[in-house]
Length: 608
Image 1 (spheres, helix red, strand yellow):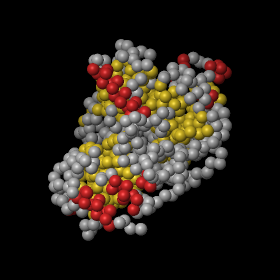
Image 2 (tube, helix red, strand yellow):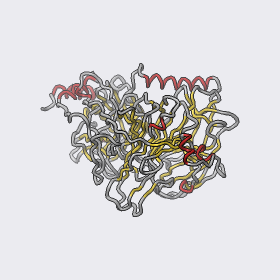
Image 3 (cartoon, helix red, strand yellow):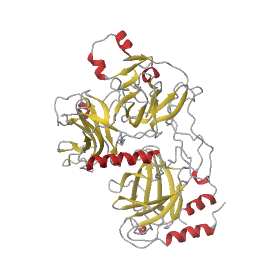
Image 4 (spheres, rainbow, N blue to C red):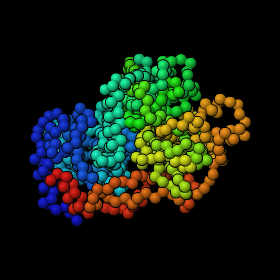
């Protein structure tokens, strides 16, 4: 079925009427605000415009690359800000100067693979220009093509990635690429997420207006970064300790373009030296909890209006700052002193934010293996959570693996039923870490819940000969989740299985375990060690996905299930995982395809 000519002519006439010839990429230089109410300069050379009605989204792109040179322009959304696991949309001119749009996905380190179902609609192709490239295209908010297309979720900041170049698409270099975090599909003004966000920002404004908001910069000592492709440097800091405070928001201080990876502040005990500088692999086991994380594209992180992270007496007093540097040219004269800007207050809020460490500590990844290796379940059992004083409101997940990490999830079980996963990363990238909100914006951990963290690791063939075990060095591996929550518990900060057999779990804090030389019987009696039950659960079944362009009304997603390829935790009827095949997520819905007419009509409705 072909698209009606009159419909396409209508779309073309609308968009062509919006164009004027302006040489710089700025918002609304070549596209009308009446048609695109949203615009952001994601780079000085790249203006991104968009409009959505809940069923579809229309993008208007204006980039400083001459369309006369038959170049290409790429845009996409990524789980974390990197290429791995990115949904990519590219407009490209062929040798005859004809423009086309390609829908592809980056499943690994190689070139992106074109989707079998091309779900993009090029509405207006670039006009000839010696200065810039301007075009418009559309797609569904949710295509239901899991594993190939990412859903554009309402009220969520998406990592928008971009690149462009001249000639046929190839590696774009360091200069012509980047990423930022943008809410593409705003939540309703009446939604709980919007209300909470507004309350959190207003609380910060109130503190600033009353001179109760203070600032502490945890910056790396001014130094020359290593002349290496990749390096990780650490330094120790002491927070204000004259009285108790709460951290209420934080942001990154970035002083070098060679720091594209991560910033991490870990909580720990007093170090031998403050303000030092050293390779992170040499760090002693002083820091036990990831507290603040930043990844490229992230802006300000604001805690809920009713809660703050405690520092000073009765809170956390020492931080270790970790910085990931990327210096592909191995330059020896690059100076940097990046770090965190921490906003804190002595006007203590109702709740303190706590950190709960869960995961799998017994890891054994074979060397020279062509297979993907599952971690096995890391269980925080109901026998531990039943000791929680009440419901814990989840603020964020900090899912953590190292360089062999492929994907990670924390699943949640209540009674005999699995519910929506607490958090997951379908495509883990060690170079792009960060915190993420829970999949359910109203997520709580109830007494008696069971949490199961599972990881999948990449093949080691041609990468490592020796087996890889759990450890703090980047050459070791981890499978952890640092859950930020409130109200804070002072007697439980760790909940995970002690050995691979998952018979017993720690349910305590590092300080409690180190404070006294107690026998195993005493640890069981005090509840610091608990037994793990092995009941069976009914697996979580996500709502049936329906392509948003084929629906009469906008949809609100029910979220995602467990991470692709993660082994089922004692779930009845779980399918086996082929370890020789990279795990992929399969859609639980019917394989729905567009009619040719309806998507065009829906997209056109955004512009009329």
